[in-house]
Length: 291
View 1 (cartoon, helix red, strand yellow):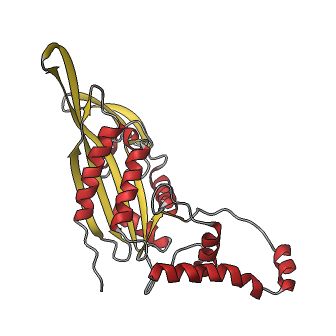
View 2 (spheres, helix red, strand yellow; view 1 turned 90 degrees about the vertical axis):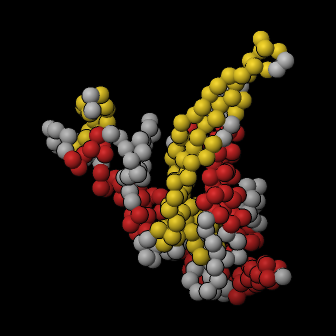
View 3 (tube, one colour; view 1 turned 180 degrees about the vertical axis):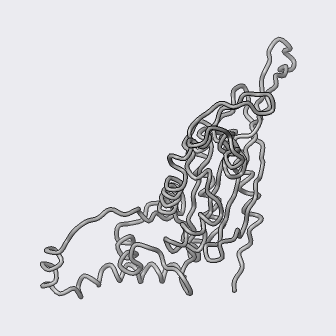
């Protein structure tokens, strides 16, 4: 019933508000009209095929502006960022499954789950301002083995402060593969600052990382001359759920999960199973309370 009433009010506002705009104001607005770009406010859809009507979108903009309601009596805004290894983030089925679980966990009436493009842009800008031009590439010997990675470009030797860069590791000590470093060097306080700048109460960053995989062959009984193969890829789900007001983690965890695929290399379906299990565990650790 609550949703029906809200929908009726939104529709009524969209239909009636133009009638209260004086005709003379139209010309004045047109003469001062200009456009400027800004990052789109994209709320996660109820499901991947959901399409909001033009009337609903117009009414929502009239009442709330470009952002969803925040603060007391409004919806809690959560910026969602999904990143990680190339093989995982390029699989739409994996991201769609993450979004679906988040929508189920956080009710739309109470939470505005937003694709945190604005927050991610700010984080990338922070990383660029802080680290761009400070690191070059080098091959050094460490523990008897040659290691290629990034080092301080201005120094002639590997310093203690450059050890993590030399190993091409991120802030968690996990290798950064053949992909942009992105937010790899940023930490909790950076996420909180970027989220707060855009009026989010929380920033939820989900980083997907490939783990080890098991591969083995087995006979197809009762035909011993025919063999089959099974691959079990592991995935790490690194969850950062930051409270922007306090700057602390509401929830932080690294969860490993295993998938399975037959007669082939690790594929999107196997990774999807892994990520689904890990995401399910993470969301089970988070409780929703009413003050």
